Structures are given as C-alpha cells and as structure tokens.
Image 1 (cartoon, each protein chain N blue to C red):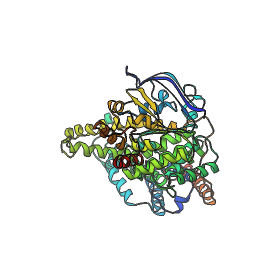
Image 2 (cartoon, one colour):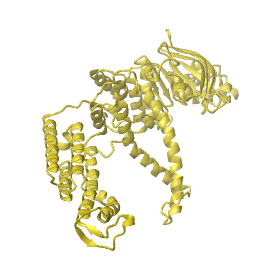
Image 3 (cartoon, each protein chain N blue to C red):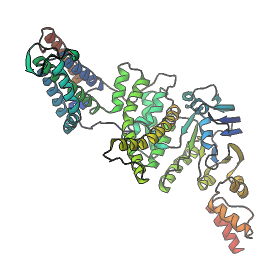
Length: 283
Length: 268
C-alpha cells in the first residue's frame, strides 16, 4: 500500500509560547490503515489532528517546521478547503462543529462548498445518514440531538465530502457508554467497511486494542512509541510513565505477572485473556 | 444553533418565496416612510397585523413589543409634539423659549407628526418578524444569495442570527454557575451591585465565545467553507404564481402610494 500521509520532522509551537506543542515528529500512514493516537491530556494529540488539513498553522498561526503531506498535497502549499477534499477532520467538541439549522443542511454544507451537483449531494446525504444510522433525522435540529447522535452527524458531515482520510479527535470523550459504542461502531465500519484511512485520537484503549492496526504514543509533543497494539500495550512500564492506561485485561495480567503468575504474552483483548487464564487454570 | 424565531405553520405567508417576503417587507417600509399622516400609517399597521393573523403568528408578541416600546415611544412623541415647527396651535404651555427652539405651543402638526413617527417605528418593528418568523433561516440565506448578496455575507448574517439563542443559553448557565459559587447578586435593587454581578457573567461569556469562534473557524474550514469553486445549493427556491401575483400587488401598491403622496395625500 502506498503512503497516504507523510509527516516529516514536524515541529510546531503555538503563537506566544516558547515551548513547542509538537517536537520533531515523523511517521507515514499507508492507505487504509486504522491508526490510533494515544497520550495523556496536553500531549499534543489535538494539535497533531489540526496539522493534517493545515488548520495548524493556517488558522492558529505560530511557528511550524517540517512537512505534512496528505494524498500528495503539502499542507503548506494548499488551503484548508482544498485539503478538506482529502482529509475529513472531526474536532473534539461536537456541539461547536454543528452550526446549521438542521441535520440535512449540516451534512449538505461541506458538499455545497465543494460545488457538488445537487443530485450527488442528495445521494451522499442519504448514504451517509444511513451509514451512521440516523435515517429520518434530516429535519432535526443538531443542537437538540444527544451527544452520540451529534458526534455521528459530525462524522456524516465529513464523510459526505468523500475524503480519503478521516481524522477524529476524541469523538467519545463526552459520551455515555451507549453513545460511545455506537460512535465507535461507525468508526470501525469507516475503516473496515469503506476502506477509509482512519486516524483516531482516543483514551478508549479497549477499543483501540481490538480494532486499530497501529498506535502512536505521544507525550509532551514527542512521538514516544510507534507499533501495533500488541507491541504498545505490552510495554507496561513505558505506558505507566507516560500516564496511559492500557486495556484493563492487559493491566490485570501485568499485575499478576509481577506477583509471580507465569504469563509470558500479555493479552490485549478479553478473548485472549480468557484463553490465557483458562490455560493457567488447567495447567 | 437554532432556527431563531421561526414559527412552523402552513399558511399562505409561510409558503411564499423568501424573496417575495423580502420585497414585501421593503415595500411596506417604503410606504410608511412616504406618508406622514398618522392615519395612513395606522392603516398600514393594521395591514401588517392582519398579516400576522394570516400567518398565525402569536399576537401576544405584538403586545410584548408594545410593552418594551412604550417608554421610548412617549419620549419620541413628546419631542415631536413640543418641537415640531407647526402652524396650528393646539395648547399653550408657556412663553416661547427660543434658546431650545420651543414656540410655547403644542401644535396640531407636531402631535400628528409625533404620532406618525411612533406608528412608523411600530410598523418597522412588527414587519421584521413577519419575514423572520415565517421563513426558515436556510431559506432566508438562499433568498439573499439569489438576490446576488455574496454567499459569505449571507452566511455570516444568518449564522450570527442563529447564534443568539445559544449565547443566551450559555449566559443563563454561567449565571447559575456563578450563583452556585455565591458570586453575584443578580436580583439586587442596587444598580451598581447588579452591574458588578453582570461582569461575572460577561467575562466568561466573552472569553468562551472567542474560544468557540476559533473551533467554529476550524470546523467550517474543515468543511471546505470558502473553497475556490462555484458553490452549489441543496435547497431550491422557485417562484410560484402566488409569488408573481404578490410581487405585482406590492409594486402596484407602491406606485399608488407614491402617486397619492405626490398628490399631497397622507401628508400633515
């Protein structure tokens, strides 16, 4: 698979600060990958999200060096609306990114800006609403929806613009378990079903362990670790020192290993843990 | 974000194209500015209130408008009554005070002109809801765009209008939060204490609005707002026969009004 995203030596500082929010970050993302970004609060995860469509540095100002290239387009040379055709960004607070009077207008907004023909907009509206499970919500007022529904509308809004990459910044941080699950299901299907490249910032390590292809661990603006969920979540010490909570089953297994249980491979999902403990029990 | 003030009903006025309603509004405004005779303006006011009833809009809102406006109306009326340079003396108040331009008399013309001015303002205030309350914000924006107003401007105008309720909500939330912390006496009879209390709402409100506006900026750009292509529109608006008839009626009324005015009707 060719790389759809190439980040090279990215360093960025917000205006009126001396301390960079991102420090010399480099990585590539192959097309169709499900990449999770984890790290403690204030690590620079949101800032990294803003880099993919050029909101950093275009809207925020500040000093940026290095380069971010998405779908062959350098964010330095292309305006955000141009990047938006390739990168769909869902920002952290769903309420603030919905500003139209109804769901239909909300989803059509991006398509209209891109100059899609009316028939195409209608088709995308129907398809994306069905995809996020909100058929029949066309005339509802976004601010009157539940948090999870708002988040799914926000995803539908960028999906309707047919981007190659979707960047989602903590889409479930303010949701109840039910709402979270529905949003995470949509995100999983974006990747598995539609083959979109997904970049997900989240604290939900259980979900990430199960569905992500790869994890970037970021702390203090630096890329600390880059690997598969298995590689990342077996580094208990490193995760603890970066204030990241691994999946509960992994954490439990560490604790047991430290107390003398003969566990060699740390499980990252409940299924794996069940197998492991069955073995321990019988052996 | 909400559809501010929109009252969803299925009436003749609701079905009219937003452009027609814009023209209607402008026509009414022009006509009331043309006449200075309060009886003519009053007739137009009744026409507007008739339209309110036709559109099934809440008439008690008119009462609210009157309530808030009474104080200002009295001042405006008094100023005209006292200082309008009329010929027919109605009531002697005092000797002439040339220093402030007071003739010493309240004149018939002054009273009439004052009444007309107040009624004009009432018409202006009651005609705007007639458009806003019968037209979804998205239709209004489309109408502006079709009237060749730049999209960016139309968007800012309609979005700013629809932001009002959410700002109001936030202000109420902040007030409650501040009360919980024992900050601010919002009910105090003392004006200065209330002023201090309102500062405890305004500061977080304004700072929050700034932060939100930056996120809104990111969200809008991320959805290709301002892309260098010809924008398309999902909503469509079509002129129906009723629109053409209505526009013709507006135009005709406007012409009649101007002819009447030129023939010195409706003037004090």
